[in-house]
Amino acid sequence: MTETSGRIQRHRTADAVVTLTLDGAPVTGREVVLEQTRHRFLFGCIGFDLIDHANGTAADPAAAARNADLWEGVFNFATLPFYWGRFEPERGRPDTERTLKAARWFADRGHPVKGHPLAWHTVTADWLLDLDNEEIARAQVDRIRRESQDFAGVIDMWDVINEVVIMPIFDKYDNGITRLCRDIGRIPMVRLVFDAAREANPNATLLLNDFDMSAAYECLIEGVLEAGIAIDALGLQSHMHQGYWGEEKTEAILDRFSRYGLPIHFTETTLLSGEIMPPEIVDLNDYQVDSWPSTPEGEARQADEIERHYRTLLAHPAVEAATYWGMNDAGMWLGAPGGLIRADGTPKPSYDRLHHLVNTEWGTPPTTLATDAEGRLRFNGFLGDYRVTCDGRRADFTLDAAGEASLTAALD
Image 1 (tube, rainbow, N blue to C red):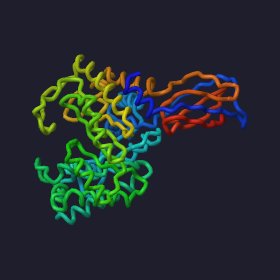
Image 2 (image 1 turned 180 degrees about the vertical axis):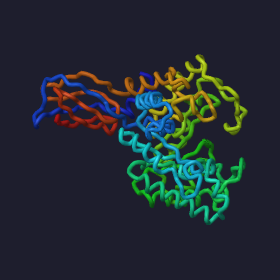
Image 3 (image 1 turned 45 degrees about the vertical axis):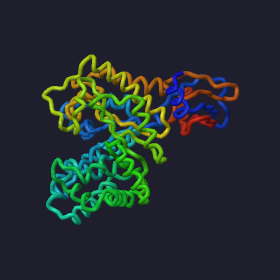
Image 4 (image 1 turned 30 degrees about the vertical axis):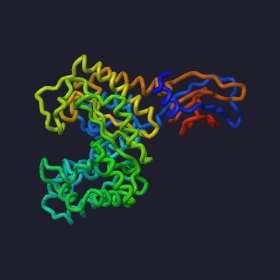
């Protein structure tokens, strides 16, 4: 067993002894089928492409249904878009109904949903430019309260504010959020939006999210925590359009940001199956090409990098979630060949690789076991939810902590 595999086993699995009972008596010497039904680790992907499917408005319902099946074949955690400029392009007319229906589609299937983001200077509402800074602040707070309350119970996790490090010095174009952040400062800006989100939904998990992996983000986090602002998890973006970070860089980043004692979410991961973006590009948005195809060589490389990346994340105990930023090449950010599915809807090797890892190597597909003379099942399993079936009856239980687990499950 490699060092990474050993750490994954240590941090993500339990040696379980489950006593199976029926009507209070142990079920002894019987064959049963054990299956993991859900991972505790959040294997996430954006759900943007499935909004129309969830609303019954997809242009090609059959293709949308296939995409939905592929999504659920690997992922158990969705991120939905709340970019203010698209969610509420006209003040007072938010896209609540359609987005809420999509969120419920995921939640009803047992997939937690995160909203992204509540505050960001990019793709923000143009009508904010008609307001002064005090009015912008009030509009931002009102917006956070509205979304947090309207979606509570369906979306209870939010990227509250996105990319604060660059926010007050962003100079690509004028926008109301940069104006406000430049006026009041980064930490007061974080306090403003986190206080609003916390008040509106005290049960929500609230993230601070950024692409800047430099010391500047560490300084921001330290300032925010010293100011007494409660952050539930740290979001780290990992768009690797310019090449895979590699294990050493990824582990170094994890070690740096885990020192705050907060859960880490890798919120935005992209790995390419085509040409790598040139290293001299500073702002990824500046790279514009007419065609950016996926290639056989690139697809083989992407599959290898997907496996290496996810193994590195699972081996670190601070990581609770990893979200891949797009399943299908049709619609990927920047037009990059970063999806796990080709534009024609066929899976790439990276999809097959991740599917195997999540469902087979790190999961328990339906497996026949036998109880012992005292009705006990013994197995090692990844943390999450399980089901045992025997003669048409079933029992559900959860492994929620790594190490050793001893519990009883009653068939009904």
